[in-house]
Length: 132
Image (cartoon, rainbow, N blue to C red):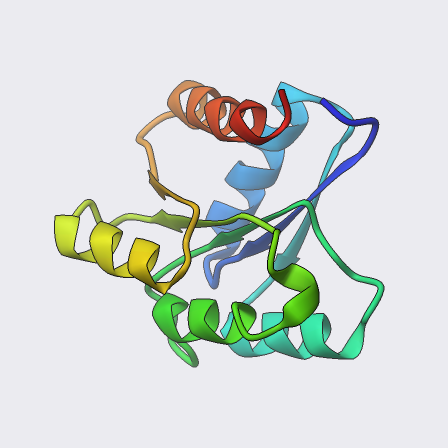
């Protein structure tokens, strides 16, 4: 993988943020995880900080202030993020959610796994798929 990979996690659950960040650091110490507590906070940062261009954006679907679909649609309107993969990271395994988010521009979909080992394995698959 690259020397330093920046992953931007947009998720309103503190525990999920912590688990996700830990899984990334277990995969590779050169992966840095930045978090936002919801879609509004994430879009504020992405729109204000022109130099902030993460390598990957991971996005929860079920958030209170702005759901993941709305956030994904807004992210896809930001030209400098056109080539950045947005991966949905959700508890939902509904085919409708998977198909709908891919139609909106999601590059992949991860159902939140039940163990750290499964999360690490799935994240590694996604990250290596884009950095081979």
